[in-house]
Amino acid sequence: MEIAKQDTKATEKLGYGMLLASIGGVMDMYTYTVRGKVFATGQTGNFVLAAVRLAEQDYIGMIHALVPIIAFWLGIFAAWHIFYSYCKDKQLIWQRIILITALFILFITGLIPLSYPDIIADSLVAFAASLQYCAFRKFGEGNNYASIFCSGNMRSCAENYYKGIVQKDKQSLKRALKYTCILLSFFTGAVLGTIMSFIFHEKSIWIVLILISAAFVISYDFNEDIFKILFLLKSPKRQ
Image 1 (cartoon, rainbow, N blue to C red):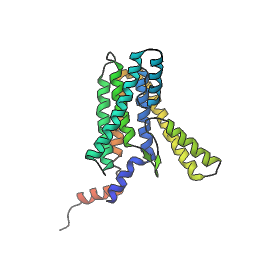
Image 2 (cartoon, rainbow, N blue to C red):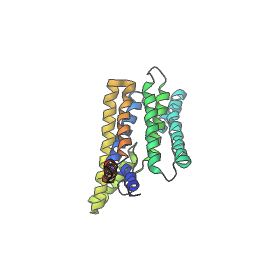
Image 3 (cartoon, rainbow, N blue to C red):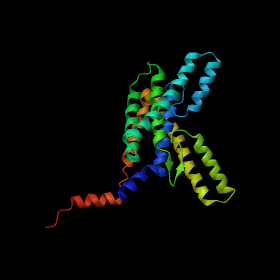
Image 4 (cartoon, helix red, strand yellow):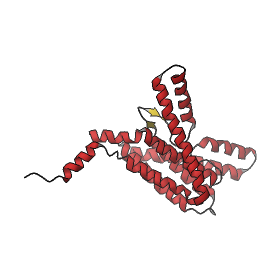
C-alpha cells in the first residue's frame, strides 16, 4: 500500500506538472502555426474566433473555430467515462490510460497531410488536450493548475505573489514561484513547438510523443521501495 501511495504522488510533483505544461505549449503552437491558426488547448480564443467569423458572415470560418470546441467537450466526456466505467478509485491507472490514448491520437495527427482540411487535425489535438486537462489537475500539496493553458495559472501565480510580497507570506511566495515554473514550461513548449513546426511541419506534433512517453515512464516513480523489492526478487534463496 505504501508503494501505491508514493506512486500516485508521482504525477503531482512540480517537475511532472512542468512536463505536462510544456506538452500543452507544443500542442497549442502546433495548431496555430501548422493547422490553420486556431487554438487547440485554450478554447476561449476559439470562442472569440467563432464570434468574429459569425459577425463577418464567414460561416465556414465559424464552423472551423467551433469544431475544436466540440472536440474538447467530447474529450472531457470520454475522459470521465473511462474513469467512472473502468478506473474508479484507480486514479493513477486512469492517468496512464489517458496518456497512452493521447499519444495514439497525436501520432495519428502527425500522419494527416497538410493537404487535408485543418479541422481534422485541430479536432484531434483538441480532443487529446482535453483528456490531459481532465486527468491532471494538481501539483505539490494540493495546488490546482491547468496543464494545457495559462489563464488560471497566471491568476494563481499573481495572487500568490501578492500574498508573498505584500503580506509577507513565505508559503504563498513559494507557491508563486512554482506557478512561475509551470508558466515558463508552457512558454518553453510553445517556443519548441514553433521551431519544430518550421522544420517538420505536420509531423512536428510528434515531439509531443517523446514528452508523453517520458510522462508515462515517470508516472511509475521508481522509488527506493521498488528497488528493494527487485533486489529481493533477484537475491538467491537461502537454503
